[in-house]
Image (cartoon, rainbow, N blue to C red; front, side, top):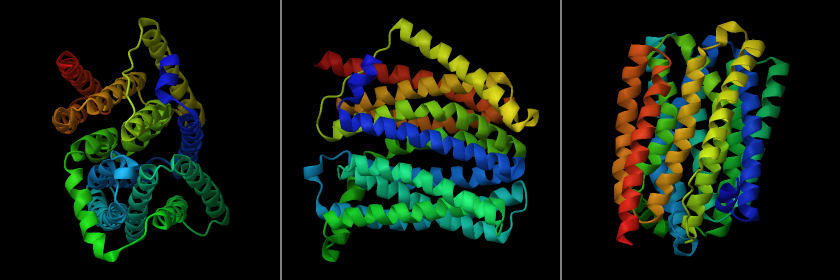
Length: 407
C-alpha cells in the first residue's frame, strides 16, 4: 500500500482515487439494477450497444485525447483545445453511424431489434463519445477535481433518471436505461465544454490549424490509446457475436462485478499519466512476494463472492462456471501490471517501442479471443487475455531494461 501511496502522491491525486472509487461503486450498483430488471436477452442487446459504443469511441478518439493530455499544459495552444473539441464532435457523429450499422449486423445474426432502438443507439453513442472526450479535455486543462466531480454527478443523474422513468412506466425498460445515460451525458458534456470554452477563447480562423496540430501529434499516441481501451471491451463484443445471445448478458454481469476492483489500477495509470504530463518523475512499482500472495488471495475471495452474489441475487441461470471467474481475476491482475509498466516505458521515452507492443496487443487479442471463444466457449476469452498480457509484459520489461542499461 505504501508503494501505491507513493504513486498516487498528494491530495489532488488522492481525491481523484477516492472519488473514482465512489463513482465505480455507484456505477456497479446501477449496472446490477438494470441487469435485474431487463433480463437476459434485453441485457445482452444493451451490453452489445454499450460495448460497441465504447470500442468505437476509443478507436476514434484515444489518439487525439492522449495527444492533448500528454503535452504539458503551458505548451497546449488555445486553438488546439478548440480543435480537439471540434474533432470530438465530428468523430462522435461517425461513431453513432457506425454503431447503428453494427447493431444492424447484430440484429440480423441474433435477434430482431425494433427501429426505435436504432435511434436511441445513435443518440447514446454520439453523447457517450462526446462525454468521454470532454472529460479528457478537462483533465488536459488541469481541472482534475472538476472532472472527477462530473464523473460522480454523471452516475447520480443516471440513477435518479432511471428511477423516475421506471416508476412512471411510460417507456420500455431498455429505452428507460438509455434515456438515463443520454440525459446525464448531455448535461455533463455541455458543462464540460462550457468550462473549456470559457478558459480558451474560440478563434474560427485558427480552428483548422488546431485540428491539424492535434491530428499530427496523435499519430504516435493512437495505437497505445486504442490498445488500452479496445482490449478491455473486445472480449464482450466477440462473445456477443460468436456465442448465443444469452451468454453476453451473463458474461457482462460477471465481468462488471469482477472489474469493479479495476478502478484502483486504472486510477493509478491516469495519475501516472498526469505526472508524466506535468513533467514529474514516474517511478516503477515492484511487488513483493507477500503482496502478490495477498493480491491472489483477494482475487480468489472476489471470485467466490461474485459467484455467490450472482446466484443469490439473479438465480442459477445467470451463473457461469467458477473457472471463468478465476481467469477473469487473473486477467485483471495481469492487465493492471501491464498498464503500469507500459506507462513507465512511455515515461522513459519508449514511445516507438510501446506503439509496436500496442499493435501486437490489439492483433493478438482479437485473434486469440476469437479462436478461444469459438473453440472453448465463454472461458476462451479470459484465457486468451491471460496469455497475451503475460507475454507482452515480459516484452515491456525487456525494453525497460534496455533503457536502464543505456542510462
